[in-house]
Image (cartoon, rainbow over all chains, first blue to last red; front, top):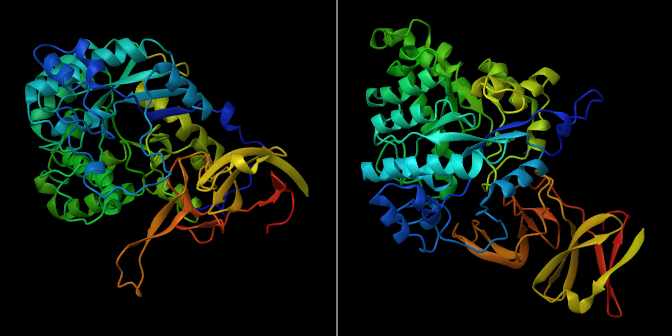
Length: 378
Length: 124
């Protein structure tokens, strides 16, 4: 953390309040009771059946089972680690308070959609969430844009969902759940999802969350602490899925598909670029469909900043971004209202050039999501 | 230096804290076992409302003398920022995770029934 090395504000820097800020990852709070009216039978019955179950943070049995909060000893603290946003009005007001102009909405509980073993139920939940998200949130506030969820347990149904919302003006992305996912997103079974997203001109955004599950890389029970599991789980998942998508050729089979990753910070990107390029020297014949070195494809991926690393020398972040040529692909995200959200002021302390700053805070996201500065799809 | 009456002693029972306004500053006033402490209501990490959360708690520590077993210590003396959980020891202003950070502390005194916060002076 670097409180001592804040750069002096430069006179010509646009103040945060005047800068376009697109927040690529914020979370709405969906409950079983709220989704039930949007859910197909018989699964709506199951949702109503758990509607009154007391909720732990992102943890409802039969809905979003097995959160990190249930595995570790809970000591008292004044850290409010379970903030939630229940209405578009609340979201708009809270985002305005941190100078965010446009925001892309992700779920709370459905971060764990991929861990649900019942494929039909998971697909019904995804359909219900998408309908609820558009009806209750994105159609009600111009600044709130939607990422519809693609259910990995039923790729054909997910592809139909993407087609259904392809022309919705308030839907700007497809959210790919990563927590507890098996197999990884590079598997060919998911090709219908990537095909549909590419046809709909919607980017796919990978998003994980901390779970402990038998599937790679969530078999993290080897760690003794939540410190270790939370520190690594998002990034491990993003690295695993991105390496998967490069090494199975998703990135070449769907050349017009835009890919973004969230909640993994940025410092792993130079590692993945360099490591894959090194491996390519020796094992190119195993990935012969890659006509460019792997880093070429990795560098096309949009990377959301949260949780932005906080090195003592904040200029190291500029160097890190430049190491993956990320000036045009790095995008701000707050992760509001979650416990590890990033206020824009933190990224604003990084000594970016004014052009880098404009791009990272907003302009790159406009390109990724294909929207104008008012959030309208182009 | 400016002395500002921020309330009556009865407004600050032991084991509680609240945020008061004094000379344009938001200050968290804590009563820990009868001693009063004042800290700025802003976390230097990401400007979170440091003193607006729930009650101060203890925290965990471990050291060689204790055979590296965690112990619950400083009961009632630790405030964690509601935004990101960065912990501070209220009586000293010391940040537990980052020792290079120490919060400024405002002098809080009792005059009669009044609680008085002194602002604008040097760090005590």
